[in-house]
Length: 242
Image 1 (tube, helix red, strand yellow):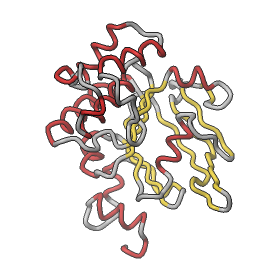
Image 2 (cartoon, one colour):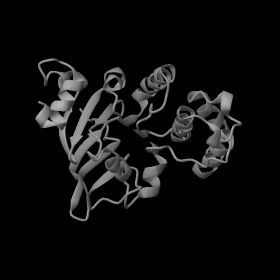
Image 3 (cartoon, one colour):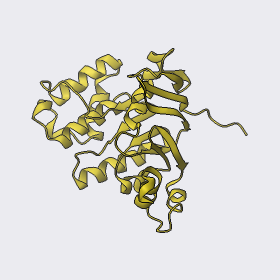
Image 4 (cartoon, one colour):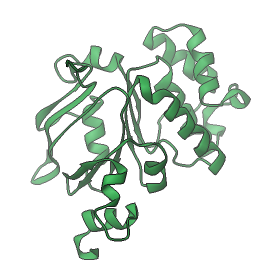
């Protein structure tokens, strides 16, 4: 029986900075309906991998594609299918939330109705007229989430999407991700293992630039006698702690 092609496909993705290899031959794919938790300690290569997938950084070797479009040779079409929430969620701080999203909508060539929809999805109605620089870290993160969702992309790549959010906001964002999941391919970098258990259908663990595990959260938990993801994570990424 034929299956739909993967919406995200990484093949041998490698990034070197001089003599240091930050990402080493990373290969995995993500299908529609999957929410992949991309896990690893600081410096493992998570953000670098995501930047290469998003087309913000060129790989030293290997390839990445989004909806069949290579991010290097067919970058414009690849980015049309991508919603990207980078680390720090940079934005134009002097602009109001609404003005910033309208600016992004013009770049994306989508209608103003999508701005209102994104504001609603990210629960930004109460701050839509405030300058972004005046917002808390949590609200700035939600502005970044709104711009990633603005054009209803097939692929979402999000670096720490709930960073800086309070517990209620985290619950709301996780619920939103679960709601969108059947229609998209989603990759989430996170340090929160409870987030993996709450929303992810699969985990990819990276350490020292290399993938050390690729399985469901339940399967990952069986790799340590305690059955706890945090114990498995330490054992996989810090062998001396095993």
